[in-house]
Amino acid sequence: MFGGVGVLLGAFGAHGLKSSPTVIADPGLLDTWETAARYQLVHSLALLAVAAHPRSPRWSGRLFVLGTCVFSGSLYLLVLTGVRWLGAITPLGGLALCAGWGVLAVASWRMPGARPEGSRGSTAAELDAVEDEGRSPEA
Image (cartoon, rainbow, N blue to C red; front, top):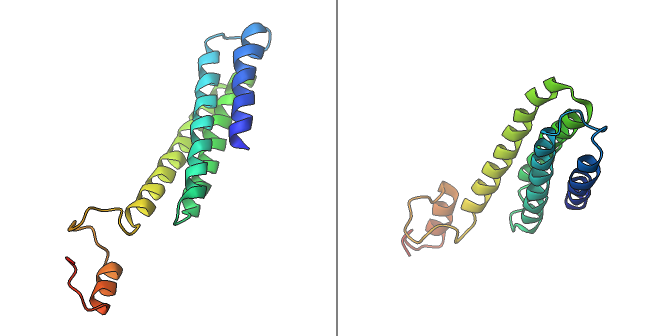
């Protein structure tokens, strides 16, 4: 859904806003619209990665949705309304997006086989499971 809406909003910015100077006062805001659409499209793909992830990191998905709505949404509104204080909200969406990537990275790092053999990144639970099987952690 995010991807389709992102394509539509990107097309609206490229064709509707660009060809109608009465909709927005500052043509420089078209770059802002493009940034919002680009981030929305990128994070719609990130949501697909979350859905396909074996560990299904729900918090990552939630943060991507929240971050996209706040980040891209505030930029879309800024362009359409000209209300500049909306730009102050945008970084909060960016923080949520960064947190979503962090949660996804941690979920991926914790997957069995995600780390090279012999790395010191084993969790206590993984080491306990190895010990319960009666083999050494290096095996």
